[in-house]
Image (tube, rainbow, N blue to C red; front, top):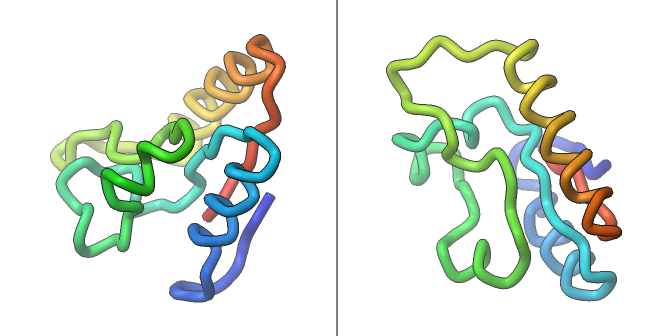
Length: 93
C-alpha cells in the first residue's frame, strides 16, 4: 500500500516499484476511478498505464453514484485476479 497526500509522488513510486518487481497497480484514489476526470485527478497517462497493468483507474462513468463499498468489492475482485496470476499488487491512492 502506498498512501500519502496529493502530489506527493505516490503514482510515480508505484510505477517504479511495479517495473522493478513485476507488480500490477490497483487504484485507491476516490477521483481516479472516474473515466471523465483524467486531467482533474492527475490520473496516470496512457504511456504510464502501458508500463504495468493498472486496475480501477477510470472504470466508472462520472454520472454513476459510486461508493467506498463499490470500490471495496471491485478492489477485492481485482486483487483476487492479480493473486490468481501469481503477481504482486500495489494499492496506491
